[in-house]
Image (cartoon, rainbow, N blue to C red; front, side):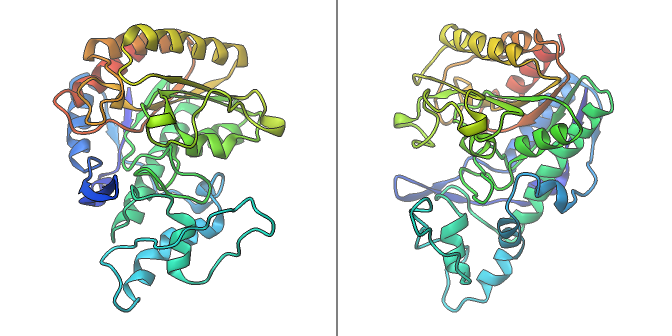
Length: 343
């Protein structure tokens, strides 16, 4: 199995995010990379660095204004008099669906309120290059699958599944899984995304919500009391042409393998009915019992069981790293999941 990873991803190193209104130490740190690579090395196989990602690939799922915003944000923010050390919105573009819709501002402060969706997407000087490297890893992984590899792992950090077309949120800046799915679709492959992160992949859902050519399926902790709160409910099934092509399977917090496997069975049957040519597995390891978010209670050996069930689809697969935060078994959990997928 080939792993795709760019060391530039480690340069994004924020210290804090906002929890319950207060700055707290952020778990989405470069330390994750060391732990995940330890699991990769125990499993074996080459680790390759991706080529630079052309903007045209990002533009398959992201708005051009958003791409310009992220590329220029840090320098523009530094020119503000008396600004905070890092970009922080103090106003938000609420009511985007209202009539008339809100106007897009020229001010970088206003644009922060348009494009930074919450207090969990801190931007540093190196954030843009790290996010580009993360997206490039997913894109190159997709190309390797198109070239004939059966299973490829893209170690993407920062993660991506909370990023929408024009919005950063939840530690995510570019939607790596969506970019990979768009590249598969562009190449004529019928594509399904299975998101097993403990948090709902609301950005991925939003990107494909009106489309029938990509099936999006997510198993996650119920959002009524868990991030992202506003999306991830079972009645969100797609819209217009996309109606019926989004499936959310929320579970109660603390879910163990038994209810998880029940939901997984429903997810895999829906994917089989869709009959895709390729699968993007948005691999959130934060379903683990020792993950800092404590959403689910999946043990290290159980990751292998989950991987074996997914492997039963017998599809070429790109595994895109999403969540999974520093914990004693993070690398072992990845090794277990990938081992199951390769079985």
